[in-house]
Length: 454
Image (tube, rainbow, N blue to C red):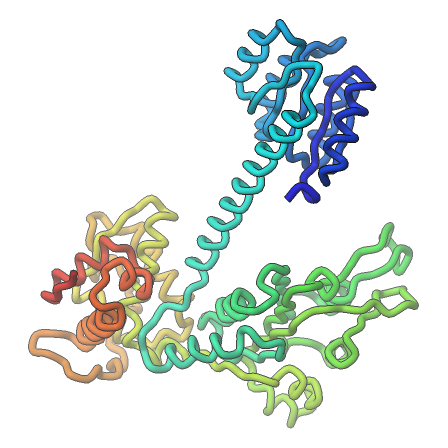
């Protein structure tokens, strides 16, 4: 804990700063010093600090002035006030405006160390809690929603492949969620604490793509005023996701092949190779074997990338997942647009089931967001759909065990609920989490289908 904690001592007494530096330094803290309030504030603005030891009486800005300024600028670093014995009332006053604690001078070394350790531990726990909440939020946003056989196979494959170091090639049409799968592979890998660096090979022009991937050294070209690391280097210790790999020009394919084989890159203008430590994940909606036959994609690169292959089915092949996707997306979009929608009509859901969804889940999300914004009540209906979804279209793949009065999509939804409830022994919260829907939505669905739980 302490070896990674930084303490800033703001005190105009050199002898006291020296004592603090020795005591805290021996305990593993990194100690920074400032001899007045202004320079202390400058340090706080310039670099991260875990704990501040702040003297109450200093020439120029007093400790209370510094504390007040920190509060005004939104700094949340714990501040321990240092005050002369007999002036405790001022320290107590400082705590009213946000100080963490106070110590009296001359400072007892054991007490100093105990108070600083407590503050540093508070910072560590707060930071871990914040990071955990971010991770949970990120995982919730990257869950793959669906209960169809096709999507369950994808999820199982991710769980098997994720922890390995093998290169993965993700195949699927636009809008199926290839980036989502890459995110899940990274989150389940041993590199999850490292960065996930994404490169869309189709979004950058060829003359910029090489410098973005491999970086450059100062003077490599006009405007290269300083060295810049490429995405391969930025992904060090983590995962590099090359999206739309089929759009890469052949010249860059050769250089990426070398990076995969030798684990080195050469920045533009550089003469010394740079070692890289990354896991490679690539994705494409192109038919790479056909491109190989046409001489547009390197066969050796294809086999280097395609150690493991994950194919994401298009939405039209897992039409039974639409009800779950609708619940999940409406909950997400409702929060985004501040438009909570309770449910959708049967006719609305049936119209979604008849559509071919050439844009896949991305198209479905766009349709739902449009409907959500235009809806005048709290139930989405046919009038909220664009005209092209109301036109006759090929029938959706029929679900099995259709009950009287149910549409195929309603049957699929009921079956997904029943199966997930059985898996979690009727536990509502776990069932809602597994299906990617809110507990309120689950309760509505259970009531709709007459299902009971504990």
